[in-house]
Length: 238
Image (cartoon, rainbow, N blue to C red; front, side, top):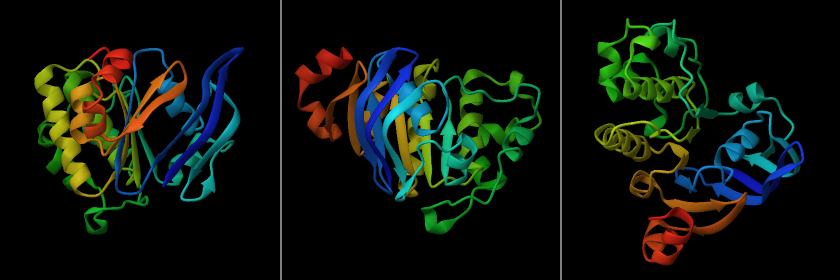
């Protein structure tokens, strides 16, 4: 389980995360919703040990181990796989090279302990198999997003953290992404999804948080949130 408790993060003098607490239980999908600039990416960077921002107070624990103050490579080695905002694939490497550079045994959970390898990734993303010899800069935006997720899976994470995976995707590709995330959910993979796409988050999440100006202003289930139109309108504009 990932447990974030009372995190305070800063960019210089700017207090961007103001006491955020949240958790991702094993085997569940948790979505963090919020408008642009409210602290979603800062939260992911704080969890993953990436600077800036600077975390000055709080706790980040995974399976009971304190991760705050640990370097990013160590945090990733504990089973946290990151799909960063903007994809950040290697443009000069082929699809297979992008995948193999991230491959490790890891600590995969779910799906009866099956490990992620090229065959399993291509089964989930058949479009990548057809493009396996193409370089990253020859892929469409949707294919690049598939590759970013597949690359994270190749590290065999026990928790997959995704920062705005639907950003820049056409509606038909967002639906395809939703279906792929549902497959991962059914296989028992824990996921933390930071999103602005309300429909995508609500379709895959077990639990939902809303962040506003660096603070959690709502916590509940998708059904609870759907029953609170005033909350959706006030904080999400939907």
